[in-house]
Image (tube, rainbow, N blue to C red; front, side, top):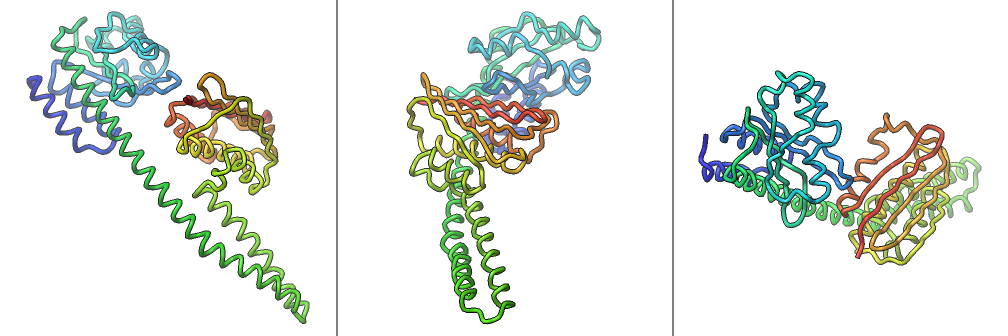
Length: 366
């Protein structure tokens, strides 16, 4: 077992060089458990809805590993509840863990001596990511030095999570700039070329002497129009056009481009920062794309409500809907949720076969 200073140095050296979040969590947890008095540990990520996800684990007792870690995924517990109510500030001894207690009632041997655990929040620069739980066999409480060590490790992990998050934002900003450059290039070169083809073929139709030549030029004209519409749609995906005139105008223009009849109702006044406005546009844009591609209808309703520092959006269509249990990546829901959560907001979707789809999200605004 390493000394506290040696362990913190070892973990810090590893964290400083790691760039993958999932790998970082697993390896940092392993280093902590292998070089301390702890026997097992697990990390919960907790989202803005208060829902937890098992982000990493190491050397769990067999009872917690059963059925794909069912006991860790399902249900609520004291540590998650305290975190969600902003009551978990420091490393804490958990007197009663509902997950471990349930396992002991079912089969105490599967606990492998793990009956209690300590927990500490993963926090950095005011941002909260989740909690780190650790436990030792036959230990019910941990002394102050042990809890201090746990807090130090949690701070290191939280700081690394923040660093990786900022790096991801920087990469995303670079990607957006590249997309905007590509959009400009497409507009300035290829779009203009297609437009020229359309103009020339249209002129050719008027002066063509044979019906065969006229028919060929008409096909070229219609094909170039189709290509131009496709190019406009692609440029919209790369760079939101029209946002300088406001979110509503941009949404109406995009809806017209993909042949969606859009109704927008606004309750309240707002002014979104540029980055927030782009993210909000992208979420609604994806919802409109889903209506166009999957709903079998060409109408969508958008309701925007601004009240008490909250910007709320509801996007609704009366289309075919889908089975929530069989949702695919084609619907882009994961990306939509991620965009909303980057703004500190909440995202939800409700749909069922034959009953349309409703997407709701809220973000805080000043």
